[in-house]
Image (cartoon, rainbow, N blue to C red):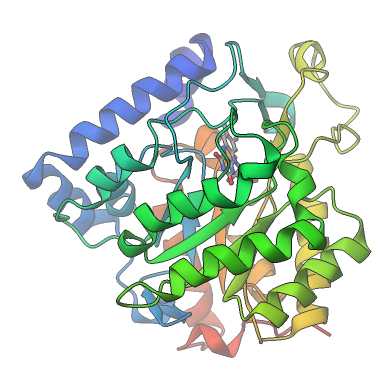
Length: 365
Ligand SMILES: Cc1cc2nc3c(=O)[nH]c(=O)nc-3n(C[C@H](O)[C@H](O)[C@H](O)COP(=O)(O)O)c2cc1C
C-alpha cells in the first residue's frame, strides 16, 4: 500500500513538500484523541520483552525516530502511536531560523538514501518549549536535540546552547548536544575536544540542575577520524555524560553504489549530509569502536542506515541500547516502526530472550 502511495504520489512531489504534507497529517493525528488512541492501541509496542531501560528512562521498545523529522516537536504523539519507542525532536536552536534556501532535500531512491542541507529550520527553543509543555494524550518518550543558531558567532556557541538547554532540558526525557550536522558552518568543528569539553560541561550543568536531572548525550558525525571518535568517547566518560549517539549524516559520497540510476547520479554531488543505506557500514563501524572503548559505561544509541529488523538486531548485538532511524521512514512508510517491533518480538521469542539486556553487546569484543 505505502509503496503504491510512495511511487504514485509522494515520489512525484518535491521531497520537502511531501515531508510537510506528512507532518501536517501527523499533527492532525496528534490532536485527534480518538484516532491517536486507536492507532496507539494497534501499533505501539506492547511486548514486555521489547522494553529497555537507559539512563533511568523506561523505553517501550529500543527503536526510535532520529532527529530531523519532527524538527519543531509538533507530532510526537502521532509518531509514538505509530510505534516509535522514542522520538528525538529537533534540532532546535535558541533562536528561530528559516534554514537554507530550497531545494535542500534530495532523494536517491536507487541507493535508498537522502541528501539534505536543511540547516536547522525551526521556530526556536521558546516555541518548541510551548509545544513540549502540553499534556500528552498518549505516552511518549521525547529526546530533545539542540544545536547552534546560525547567526550566532562561534565565540557565542556555548551561551547559545545553554539558552536552549535552559528552556528545553526540563521538558526532555533526554537532551542531545548536536555538534555533527554538516549544514551549519563551523558546527562540526565543535567536536574537537578542546571546544567540546567546555560546551558539554556548560550544558551538563543545566541538565543536572533540572528537577529530575535530565540525561545528556552528544551526537557525533561518521566522518570523524577513528582517533577522534575515541577522544570524544573518553571525554564523555570523563565528564560523566549518559551516552553517545552515532552517527549523523556523512559529507562523503564514496559509499554510494555504482548501481546508481540516472536520477541518483543527478543529485549525488549536491552539498549536504547523506543518510540511509550508504551510511550503514560506517555507522556500524563507529558503534563497534565506541563499544570497544567504553563498554557498558555509556549508553550507545546507534543510527545510520537502519532499514529493517536485521539492522536493529545487529546494532543491539554490537552494543547499542537504543537504535534510531529516519531515512527508512521515507522509503518504508508509516508502518515501518510497527513492523520492526513485531519482527523483533518474534525474533526474541525464537531466541528465548525475555530481556533485551541478554543480547545487548553480545557480539562486542
Ligand atoms: C532530512 C533530514 C534532516 C535531518 N535533520 C537532523 C537534525 O536536525 N539534527 C540531527 O541531529 N540529525 C538530523 N538528521 C540526521 C538523522 O537524525 C540521522 O542521524 C541520519 O539521517 C542517519 O540515520 P538514517 O540513515 O536512518 O537516516 C537529519 C536527517 C535527514 C534525512
